[in-house]
Length: 166
Image (cartoon, rainbow, N blue to C red; front, side, top):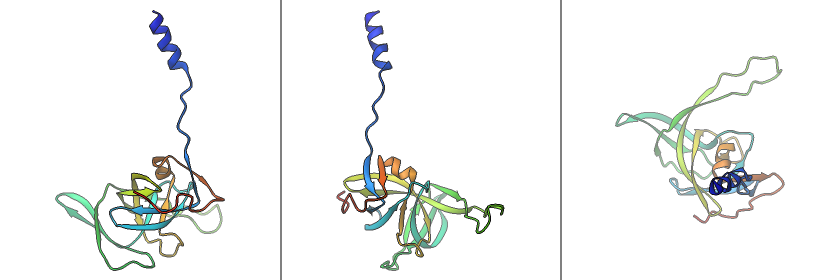
């Protein structure tokens, strides 16, 4: 009986979660499968991560959905990448103008699982593919990926993790 009471008292103690690692609004992140390091925007307002890609083409391989694409970045060469699709996401569009307008139709984007390295931490995260060439940062890290990295963001800081070391 005493051991049961001791166990119950231990279970009643508050669980201390690990403190998140604090990163800046912008960080360097390496995408292992692509072999490149990108400047990334850490965006708590976005749900998923996004990588700038163009010529995005879905196809089947051995009954599975795959995607073929090229990077849509300033210094990208014409190399074609192929990756298995983990799912198709529906991204809500932003409507222009008044709040009374109907929201824009959601767009569908292929999502792939990519191994990312932030500082010395490596995680596999879901990344959707979309042309971000009109943005300053080719890689956007959203809330899901931030949770995978155990990250918190200080918007006043930049590049706190230095170059990836994975």
